[in-house]
Amino acid sequence: MSRNSKLNRRTLLVASGAIIASPAVVLAQATERQQAVSDLRRNASSFITHEWQDHFDRLGRGIIISDTNTMVLQHWTSNGEMRIYPTSVPMTDELTRRGYTEIVEKREKPGWGPTPSMRERDPTLPVYIQGGDPRNPLGTRGMYLSWQYYIIHGTQDTRKIGRRSSSGCIGLYNEQVEEIYERAPVGTQVKLI
Image (tube, rainbow, N blue to C red; front, side, top):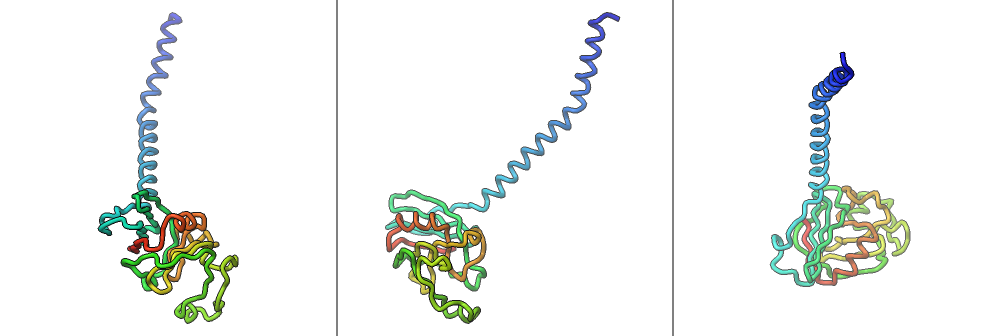
């Protein structure tokens, strides 16, 4: 046998092995791609966005839509710029109020006192906590809605974001509520869905 014949046989054997193994490699790559697409869909589905026009007639001073199912707040400024923020939402549907409201007051370092129903559920709650106190659940900013006891606010406890953890309010990371606070004037339209 000549040297070229051995090379050709080796080449043929290596090529045959590659051909036999290639379906498994292609299948593995396809499976990885499918998993990546599945992961992307799962992650993207939690941030379903809404169009403000589906809920309001005009932008006015701005719009906030807070989706309590996907735990996302969208904020549009009066010029149409939109940003998305993860939130905490009420623990149960009984604590959740849905519908149209607006920001009627804004406070930096808001103080906090539990609502009567919160004190009924847990009589050990303090009567009042000053703004700026690390135990204060309202964080660094509060935007009060026209519904009594409902606030869009920050939180010191960042573990609450992305969870059903509030007694009715919408909570955000302090840095993000500060951003919204600066961009959303009193009179900003709000819808909780």
